[in-house]
Length: 554
Image (cartoon, rainbow, N blue to C red; front, side, top):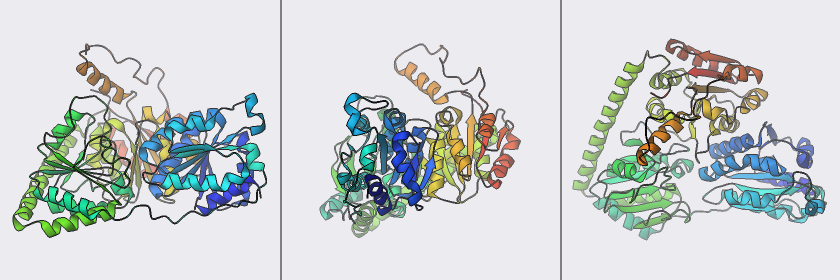
């Protein structure tokens, strides 16, 4: 056998069913071997970054590792931004790139570079296979490291001559590793004592709860103590039902605003996240004065990294949350149970008031033209099938999106992590591959879409049932908001224009772009056209683009 056979056998042994890639000459051994592995489908992209983005979303949706094939130094460079996003999203992705023949690397042949060094800063592990005899070991380790908590991308450089070298070392099957055990009973006891005595407990959850299918466990715990539940400001999946009376939504992106959101919390339970990814610097802690912190993580790496905690617990999310809930159930007296019930009732009343305010705002904005953000979200929700997967990168529409789209399960929503834009359109490809046959709504802004618009061709090529809803305000709206904040924070004049933040002159024709890549498309400019247009798009059964004219920054 040859190195390329061991590589492909390794993928098959680890349950890989798709390779997301952009082909190149140094990938010839892989591409020429695909026909011998009908169980592995190649998903072709027109740009390397899009292949990484799709693979990342597929891995996050399935919880299983995915594989990406990039092309030498420029191709890897094109993928680095999306690899960074995958790292922040904790996506188990094995990224490869073809390398030039090792026998001429010292002569710096065309397109060559130190690929492992290029990828190292944004991966958990980065290496190059030196001989075909070590292909089995490298690939087994690559999958292991990608899947070790916290999950993340790894990189393997594949020289073309190594792929063709003979070897007697066959592929090695994966280890059946039980990576996270039960929580330390002492930690559970201390955490339960802190929460039981808390006057005003608050929970902040990250993506790990949903990723490990522990939503129900968190709901029971939150209801037990009557605590409000916040999510990180940037979320990749659902970790607590958004319509639950105790759900408070997403936290802001600076310490002062986070501290204000947490109110008078005296105990804060942090579960499964980096805590916190700030945008703006503030002096001081994001936590109220005197608040005691409990943190639960599936690995030791993020535990207490950014903030000193009174109790830190390493365990799987289901086992830790279940153990903590059982300890609280055994320790709470009738008085504390009644206090928790009172807090639950107060949170339900506040949730109802928030919903009433949203409905009033929606009514006021219903007929506005260009189409208002509340109306867009309401009609998109009304026209989208209940079983659809939602991929969302509508950055400045977050509040209206959260109000219109309630989620309770961990397999219906995928959001963008890392902050690099353009993930939504590419990620929708990966979501569709992960959930074959299910409709996908890709909700994105026009600025973000232009980073990955070539993904429309891939959607059309494989006839994936994705409706791309492009919210077109012809501007980088989030940059305008952030420029306002910058000017306020640093005392800069606020009567100046927004430089280079408008996407007009010329006007981009998204319908024309879509049809040029093989998708049916429609432009929606009036509020009363939107719901029917969304229904028609999903009824097509294939890829479809909606260019939706919305109001800009007011």
